[in-house]
Amino acid sequence: MLESYLRAIAAAKPGRMEVQPVKAG
Image (tube, rainbow, N blue to C red; front, side):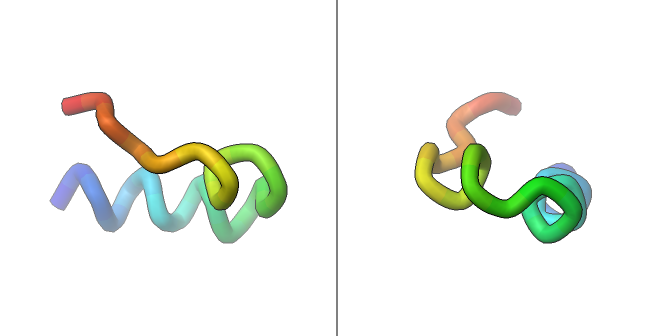
């Protein structure tokens, strides 16, 4: 659920979230 949301953001802003793993939530 939350991962899907963060993944959507990473797709919209590739380069920052793609390099850094999401560890919030």
